[in-house]
Image 1 (cartoon, rainbow, N blue to C red):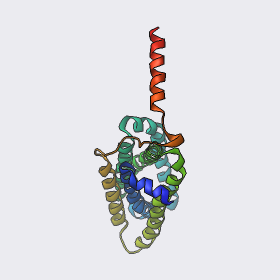
Image 2 (image 1 turned 120 degrees about the vertical axis):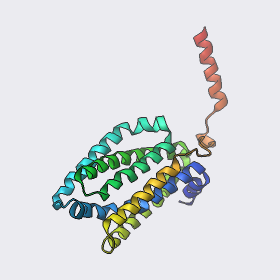
Image 3 (image 1 turned 135 degrees about the vertical axis):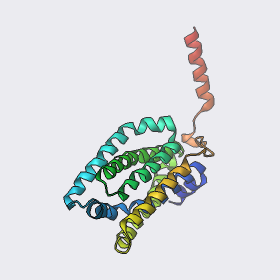
Image 4 (image 1 turned 90 degrees about the vertical axis):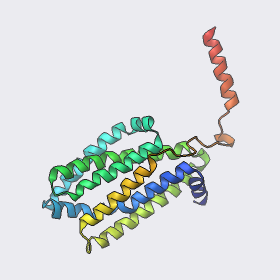
Length: 219
């Protein structure tokens, strides 16, 4: 775990990505309780209608899953992660409305951002981490993200009894949107870190191979 944390916080692009994701997960768990309040107090629908809201979010997630890899390639991992977190905030803002169409549209946007965030963060971790550290970095990332998520679920369950659900929604979407916007700017050290040992790329050898291929093609 310590080795994974050292690599995460010692690599600027990973440090920024993980901290932005952790900040978002520190409030995203509020949705475990505010979602029911949106359905009951905002939309005045029966409990079973939660199934409709979740299904609509699933439609957005399906579309996001199909397009996530293409968007990550086009935008780059850091920007794609930022866009994903920003979509969490934009989509979640629809929960403050009492109009069904707005809530449903927000759920589609929120669902689209879920796989985009996951694919972008996972790809960034893999590209910026030597293979020998991948397991340790994955474990450290799970703790840094899973811990805040667990805390946010508990805190949200406590606060929903004393605060209007719209206050919790407004706070959570603001944090997620700001976290996403923080990633939508040039980030230093975007290059994949130099690897050593069996993880290293034999640059000189690969260059010789490429020159040999070019000579073969020219012949």
